[in-house]
Length: 42
Image (tube, rainbow, N blue to C red):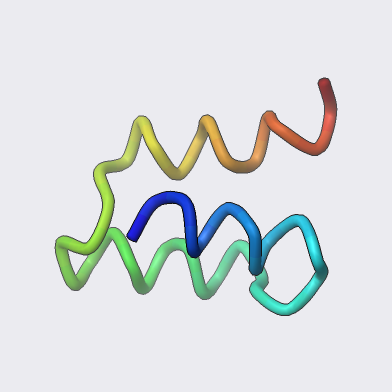
């Protein structure tokens, strides 16, 4: 699930709010969310 969300986020198809919802639904962990967000900066 992490890889799919990462791809969607990088492609602009998923917002930070969407990532937050994924954390709330236990699809990913909070640290994975932060890693996805940082991936665009790196």
